Length: 247
Length: 255
Image (cartoon, rainbow over all chains, first blue to last red; front, top):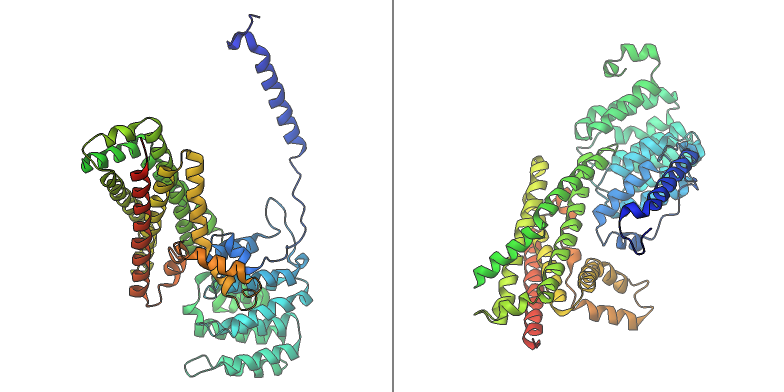
């Protein structure tokens, strides 16, 4: 080898090194292919100011990123975690934080009612119901619908009639002329002691009939799916006109 | 002479691939925003809108800051600045010409982003989109003048670009800082620090009031004329301060 030579020909050893480490990298990758980052449950929500500062004060972006994060907590990178394993107290902290960033958005209440509300561990629903209650009474346009969802979760999922009745009375107190009569009827629905599915069916179909045109199509789809797949039996589903398009 | 400087800067934009790079990055940012936004279970349009607006804002702010920093420092390093000042142009005219061309660049880029947002979300288009577009123009203009000032004052590209972006970041969070200072629960704890932050805020533009994505999502709430006035006054005032400061620096400089 010539002294101080700069040509590739005289430094073939570099190419061998490159090839060696590339093969080692490939081998190493095959060994860690199925490794996943550990799931340490939902972390505690940060302080509002600190969180907004990390987005340079852009609250709308902070809200959307948080929403996306909440939707995918525990379910990313090929890992799937049952909703019942989520720490719902911290989930509700994130929900309240998100709500304070964009109180007009329906995304987080939607996620709380239909996604986190589907938790198999019913006792964990209390923080979610508390969140839906706060959104429901916030007075925003059509926000009362989330109080209806809170009543449904309390009465038919958590089966806490006292809580459901308190929420239903709150809902009834929000009624103003021009709003659906179902709001006024809610305390009666809770007290009637009807079968769980029968009462849920009546509330949900009433909500769809009176408010369906104001809802996001995805929310309508979720409600129809809930009615047809969880409330009705296969026989009832076949004869219900609402479920014609539901497979 | 001013037209010559105008053409000179435009050629630098083309030479540095500023326009083509930002346009390509825009396509990537929009595609990514649509992809990520579409994964939301509902309100997909709102997600896409916010992601596009925010990502393009940061992209153009960083892009134009880097371009100006490299352009100005190179002008000084290669003695092009000395050469141009031997031509029949005063130092003030030189800075003002650059101010004008940067204004046109800010107008062009903000027009692209606003047009893109309006085109994609044409069903939701309203006056609030124009307010957002105007505020983006104001924000971009202040950033270009900021980058121009730091690049003329400092000698290194790295320090000029970092100083501009740090000042921009500070301007974007100054509203939150004032919120902490004025919070009755926490603001009174450290009167010295609170007073200092209030003092600093007097010479920092309120960029947190610009490009609020809520305007795109929910409209400007009927306060369009008031918002427009605040944006216009803030842009005109701070833009003028920066241009004047750049003029002073160049006038005091020995070549």
